Image 1 (cartoon, rainbow, N blue to C red):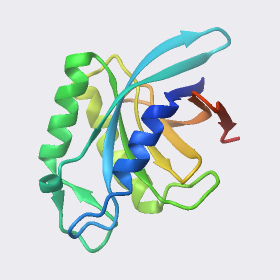
Image 2 (image 1 turned 45 degrees about the vertical axis):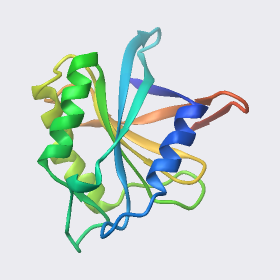
Image 3 (image 1 turned 120 degrees about the vertical axis):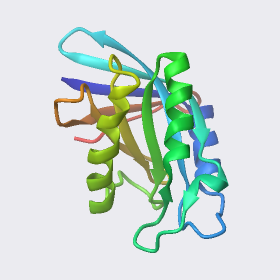
Length: 168
């Protein structure tokens, strides 16, 4: 199944502004995106960004082995928001730079542990993770708890100017 993700440009700018804020001890910021999903012809799934929630400063945990670690309260708050709106939940952070970014080994290991847990609260929606650069993004989504992840095939930042790009 090919995944397509659309985000309003205004939301992309909000996400970039939040992720670029400094934290007292974390080296990067984290947030959560809520998405809706609809099936399209030809085995495509369209994910539509609904809203973004930053992780509160007090929900970061000190961990020198990674850029940012968030605790259980951050996940609980995000899952409650996603549950109330019947949304898919997406963990977001940024690696900066330009071009299509890649997930680090820590990103892939930790994401494969925590993202499938989102299905406990919201089993009927896809969930995932996105990493931004300064001008592009890459994403991985799980369509159900029992399957592995799938890359986002195309992103569209909708607004003026429209930006569409594919990971492959």
